[in-house]
Image (tube, rainbow, N blue to C red; front, side):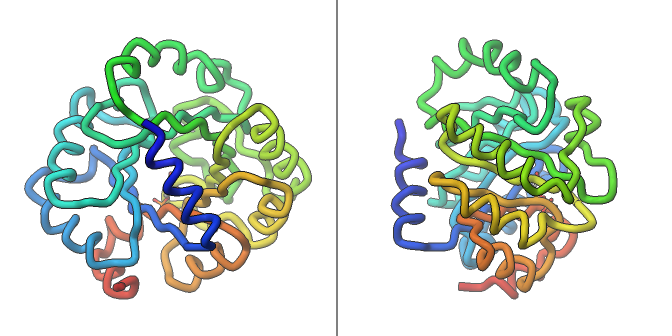
Length: 241
Ligand code: 1GP
């Protein structure tokens, strides 16, 4: 099943802007799902990502099944851990944390996940995950015990992303971290996009329409927003179709 990735490629070739709403299973109550997803459906969002750095086992499957009842948008797992794999979703970002040097998050957990993935029909999308310093420590740093790349080190960020592409990864995700004070800068997005021939995802700390537009203008193909919707669902009104 490669439908989700092929659809992303098709959208990118038509220069369509993609937006994923990120739902953290630990923060979304099941009885709130229908109302929340209705708002997603009437907004410009195109994808729903589900995942978090720390999630209780078995929570993700139940949540994704509930989400799927109310939307036709592709639901993509953005897993912090192997326990978040569920066949109720359409695809999974098979993330390798290429900004870090922790072998568990470069290849270890991937091997552990294979027996589970073989039992699913998920579109497995190899994605180079690049954590960029944003001024405060993030959950990703804490959980993975890795350091982000300093934001001033633009050439190193570009080379890291390009190395991911050369390794055969299908997308690159520039991550400032959930709830980041400052999103990934326009300059970083611009330089990385210039170097890449694969779709570019950008997320972390995007809380306004202006920041969203800035990310697209700089070259992001798909933007991920979580906290802004969690904290204030009226943000959906600004992003109505
Ligand atoms: C986090 O990039 C995502 O992994 C989204 O971040 O919660 O800050 O929108 P926010």
